[in-house]
Length: 227
Image 1 (cartoon, rainbow, N blue to C red):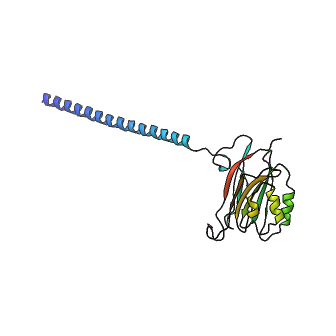
Image 2: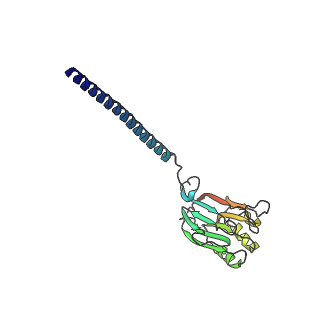
Image 3: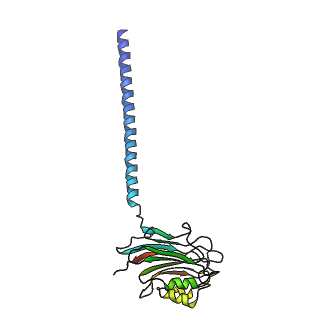
């Protein structure tokens, strides 16, 4: 009886030790797997953060060099969504700011400091071109001029208005027509034609919207005016 009791005790102890060993091994494996997954997720998160593309001013595709102003702009979309003009991460004109309207939208910026001098829009469908001509004549030398159309920016344009805009560096203003989409960045006193201009003609065969072409966008870096 004593021998049988001792044998049972030995078997019970052996089973307990075996069970404890198995459980400890399984738990250790799970812990290793959990830690491995944790470190793997951490490494992936770090890699994702390091490969996330940087954001540049106004959301442009690359950083501007020193002594340049970053800008991005878009014309209006049909007669529904207004244009948008951004300079140095500052939205100068947009539908959200409620300072855009049908016609030609204009933002004036100090070419040395980047300070916003004025924002206005001129109705070139049902309005009078005379205030626009007066506005263009009063722009001071060294001023950066950004323009974007919304709906129709050409019907009321006269030869004089077109000439004044051409003197700011525009090439396309001479051919800007009814409901064309157009964005332009130039300056008063510029000696050459501006490289910053986009123009899409209103063409019923290619229009994206009924009666209007697609939105035209543009971005770039404006050289800061030096003394």
